[in-house]
Image 1 (cartoon, rainbow over the protein chains, first blue to last red):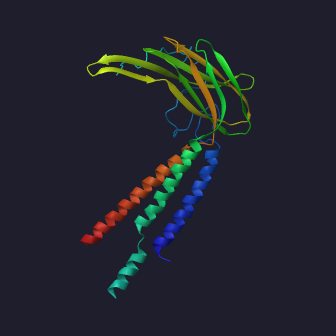
Image 2: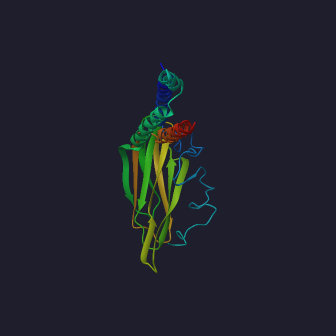
Length: 77
Length: 192
C-alpha cells in the first residue's frame, strides 16, 4: 500500500470520526443561547443574532435599560 | 529502470491533490449537514400581537433536554420609524431567565439618484433549552411610531448548524492548502 492510499484512508477515518462526534453536539444545540446555561451567551462561533441580556435591570439599550437609544440608523442611506 | 525508479519515488510521496479531494468532499458533506441541521422541524408557536402592550406568549412545552429552537420576530414598521422589540424567556413560574432584543427601523428619503428606502424589520435568534419543561416568552416594544403589528414565530430546530458549518470551513481550508502544496511541488519538480 503506497503512502497516498494510507493517508487517504487514515484521513477519511479521522474526518469521519470527528464528523460523528460533531453530530451529537449539533443535535444538542451546541453554540446557541442557553447551551451553556442561561448565565452565558451564545458561542463565539454564533454571529448575527440580537443582543442578549442576562439581567432584567441592567440592560444597555433595552427597555428600561441604562442607555438611551432610538432614532433608527441615523445616517440614512 | 528509470521509470521504475520514478514509480518508487511517486509511491514514497503523498499525492496532496488526492488528499485534498478527501478534505474537499468532507467539507461539502459538512456544509450540507449544517444546512439540514439549520432547518426547522416543527412550528410550535405563532402569533400576531398588538405592539402597544406587553404580552406573554406560550406555553412552549420542551419535551427533551438540550432542545434547540428558533425564535423569529418581524414587525410592520411605518416609514421613518424605529422600534426596539425585546423578548424575555421565562420559566414555568414566569421567572426571568434572559432576554434578547434588537432595534428595527424603516427609513426612506430622496437624494440625487431618486427615492430610496432601507429597512430592517425582522430578526431571529437560535436558542437551546438545556432542560425540558414549560417556558414562556414576554414581548415588549418601544418605538417612536408603533408598528401596526408584530409577528412572532417559534419553531423547533433539527439541531445546531454551527459544528458542521465550522468543520466544513476548516476542512475546506485544509483542502485548499493541500492543493497549493501539490501545485508548488509540481512546479518545483518541473524546474528541477
